[in-house]
Amino acid sequence: MRRLWLVFSQAVTVAVAVVFVLATLQPQWLAGRSSAAGVQVMVHSAPAGARGASADAPVTGHALAARQAAPSVVSVLTQGAQTRSPHAAEPWFKRYFGEPESGMGSAVIVSADGYLLTNNHVVEDTQRIEVVLADGRRTPAKVVGTDPESDLAVLKIEAQGLPAITFGDAEALQVGDVVLAIGNPFNVGQTVTAGIVSALGRNGLGLNTFENFIQTDAAINPGNSGGALVDTGGHLMGINTAIYSRSGGSMGIGFAIPVTTARQVMDGLIRDGVVTRGWIGVQPSDLSAERAAALKLGTEQGVLISGVLNDGPASAAGVRPGDVVVRVAGRPVANTGQLLNAVAALKPKQPAKLSVVREGRSIELTVQIAQRPKAVASNRRADDEGQ
Image (cartoon, rainbow, N blue to C red; front, side, top):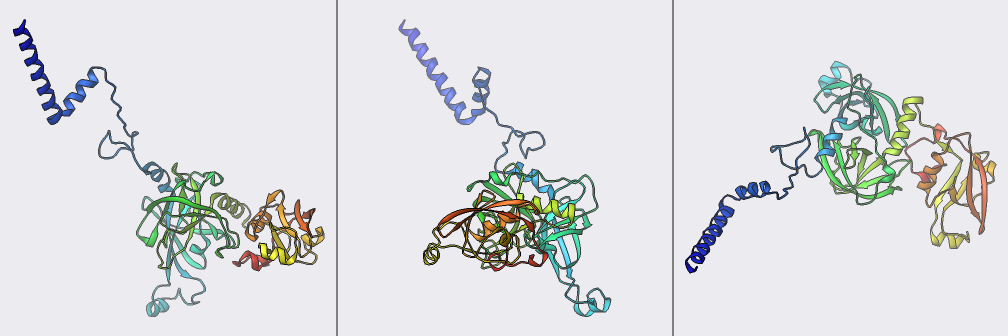
């Protein structure tokens, strides 16, 4: 009996030693044995067509979002400001003064038949526009329409079957959501950067008349203007427009026009050649607690009406200087930018309710919305013009 126990103990010792050696030198042998014995092994594999060097390597990061959206983002090359010289196209001018100044930017394919969204400042006052597709093809583009007040423009190229981007829901974005910026910074070629949504509804920056920017820390540089800001599903959330920078490069503060605004402008430019916006004819100004107390307005919330245009829609509705607008068509407004956007979103020739506070009393007024005059359409700040 003692001999049997001795043999058993020696066999166990040898077996443990063998397992130890195998686990150290050839662990995959034991993994294979464990799987065969019924131990479940979780293996993550990439979808077909999305695998890298190894067929079993997992897809990490935001590769799928970039792969989904990148083909829809193109480079825009512009040449020659039309106002630079009346002789810029003449051979002698080119000989002595060189080619007209060129520019660069980006654009987003929004339809399979060749419509593109970009920034107005990318194509403003140019003689020639060329688009470089993600697959390397180059084609001329023409301007369908521009909207300087939102800094948006629509281009058209003669092509079919293009990879149009999928529109997302910018209203669902939250601060902290991951976003990708895709464009052609410094004309180095298509580039993808990643960051988060840093803030929403940025306005009062003095960049456009209508401001409701998505702020992001995804790197945006010169040349990214007009490119796409997309979510982790590759859906378009905004059009990259501007950066805050002391050096000319990215400092982690970039701004994009929400796709909600971009789509509204795009539809108007393609359908009518112009963007239809509401207008009531008032001079708004921001309201501070000190100003409200000094003027004895009876409220610290809303937008102060400093002036009312004679014979304008607001005047006809009974709006007076000193009134404080707190809601437009049921939509709360807290500053001039919000008032500007709320009124612009209303349809001309339609009535709308204005909720105002006058000498501490709440009043409901009905105003007949008018079409925003072209004379007002300029790149001035909202608090410097009539709305």
